[in-house]
Amino acid sequence: MPAIANSKFLTLPTILTLGRVASIPLFVATFFMDGWRGTVVTTSIFTAAAVTDWLDGYIARKMKMKSTFGAFLDPVADKLMVSATLVLLCTRPLEVAVFGQLPWLLIIPSITIIGREITMSALREWAASQGSKLLEVVAVNNLGKWKTATQMLALIILLATRDCSRGGPAILVGSGVVLLYISAGLSLWSFVVYTREICKVLRSQPR
View 1 (cartoon, helix red, strand yellow):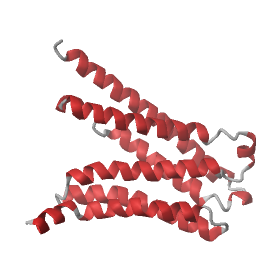
View 2 (cartoon, one colour; view 1 turned 45 degrees about the horizontal axis):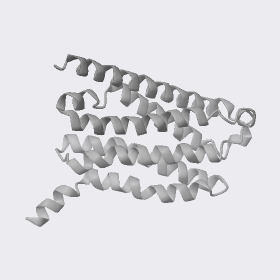
View 3 (cartoon, one colour; view 1 turned 60 degrees about the vertical axis):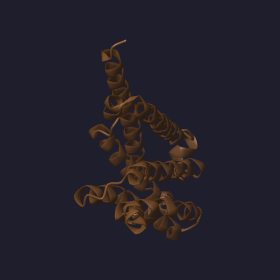
């Protein structure tokens, strides 16, 4: 019986998620490596993390391997990787002229995204304590999925262009920045939508 319980705890999706968490220290270390090799390794680690973020959910649904621990760990792993990337990009920004003139360019969307994730985590924890109705309201929706997709693409572009930015792929770097701002906008929009839905549920409840 213990073996069965253990196999349910360590399903394939959960192992993939744990792999994402375990890769963060290596990701941080390679970020500070000089030269194209560091850029390639850092970008590859983040890209692999983004792919497994989708893959573990797909496997869990298709192969019916959903678990309570996996449902808890998956968003935590995602937030840890994204937050680490945003902080690293802010501490060592791209070597493009516009970043010297506008040092806050990456800081504003980074604070917005990280702040929203912290607030939503607290909101979901509170909703879970209030009952199933509120918990359904704060479940991930299509807007949140679009936010994640643009966010991942933006960060992959910004990580990939760190080493070659001195050569001037301004359009590519700019597209990464624009996507990051779009992601930040979607983050705020989705938060407003969640908040509005919560207020509707609370107003409908008998006093």
